[in-house]
Length: 131
Image (cartoon, rainbow, N blue to C red):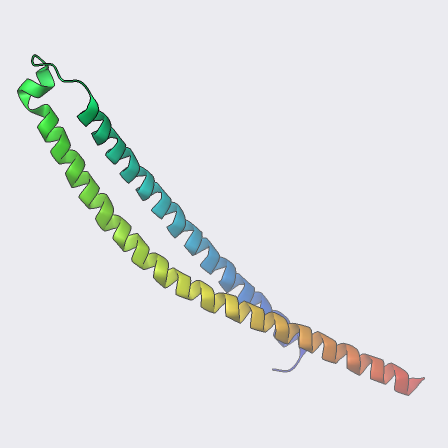
């Protein structure tokens, strides 16, 4: 594998692999952001509920709905936190893939540039020899 065409194909393949790794990481980061936003919204709504003034005749208070709602919020937070932990683990794996793909992309670009330079030097040498 010494020809420029060989390195062109390799560089293209490495670039595609790198873009795929970037897209995977972007999806994971978007998912992480959504989960963190959902978690923040739940925490905020629970804090707002806790700070809201209570009246003794409040039907939600009498029926125990506020207690059940708080339990639901806590359960939902636990589920989101578990999913967030999974996403963070995926993120680390994806980060490693992205680093590797980035390195391969840079190396193949350098190999391609060297092959182009070598081809140009050879062409110049031939032109100088023929003159």
